[in-house]
Length: 464
Ligand SMILES: Cc1cc2nc3c(=O)[nH]c(=O)nc-3n(C[C@H](O)[C@H](O)[C@H](O)COP(=O)(O)OP(=O)(O)OC[C@H]3O[C@@H](n4cnc5c(N)ncnc54)[C@H](O)[C@@H]3O)c2cc1C
Image (tube, rainbow, N blue to C red):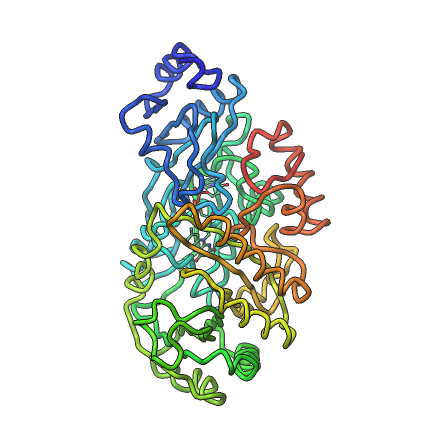
């Protein structure tokens, strides 16, 4: 028994169960194999103990237990971590799946999300009152991990990042205290939480500002042959620079797979895809996207208006649990012509399910000062990332290698910072690349105050 639990005896677990009214799961229990799963199947780990607290007291008990036993703590919100930070071999997982739920105060336009809530819950609760909080693009992502890292999505130019709409958090700290942080309560901690949040405690509640919005989102896609990459890129760059806040733009370079879904002239070939989301009035869409037609003729083009809630969950199944995934991101202001050529050449070898994307920043998220929060990179004109999703473990090496080589192509174009939520590798070098020297120093001072023993270290870690 002791071996299976990595130093935790049955007696320890019984004591935990006695002091803890919530669920405790250990190896051998029915449901252990299901409970230990996370979104990315690469992280097939075997925690010694999983607990499912239903409130801050349970979280504090779990932290105390882990500290007494010297167990590594993994905190799990939605379980989507790109780096596998929400599970642990031999550690203790604080699984927040019984701390879901979102409440909306429509008069004050505020949402309160529990620490384990999912984006879909926040979207549905807010839209019930014609309101929205800008979040990510897949409904089963956790509000927790997404917000503590930043929160990018279809409405980021219109309403800012998720953290730009965060009013306050309540978190259980390393010493088991329940602390509230906002602009006026523990403001320095609140600064660090918005971008490096997984380092400072277990957040049991988030409070967000909401905006009137919906119910429709207007969207379109233009597909171009890769031979047009230079003309499409310069058009995209110019349109992005002049776009109203309501217009969100993404350019991606990949391969037209599965072939049945593309026109024969490009099927199976490298392509350049420009997609937009317009969150303003239907009447302004045509005018705002007209500039996208000033360049090469696309091989296919579509436009339409859809319920926002439908769009927000449209890819939930395709991006479901159990696949394997690898991502690497960064920021850039522009791309060298030779980088574009190399990306197209690289796309010809792209495994199915992989691509390189550039998302236009600016708008509301660009008007917040970079040093206003730990989050780094909002001054760049574009966020960029390469990612791959696959099922067969035999493709682990080729898929991750494709992503790494794509990002190596654009390394000379990169500017300061990386988005913490799209970095699959972790270590001191990655932490420095994410936040830069000055912010790492400020975060380390904060870490020494709130978590001097580095109890919360399974994250893109700030060493105290
Ligand atoms: C399919 C998919 C789609 C995505 N789409 C987007 C997107 O559109 N926009 C975007 O910005 N990002 C997106 N991401 C990245 C996503 O934001 C990160 O993976 C994020 O960390 C996931 O949060 P989670 O709670 O689901 O993950 P988890 O794996 O549960 O947690 C991730 C990290 O956050 C910590 N954490 C989670 N909850 C808490 C909490 N309550 N208190 C303290 N620490 C906590 C964990 O310890 C861990 O370090 C996507 C990821 C996937 C896999």
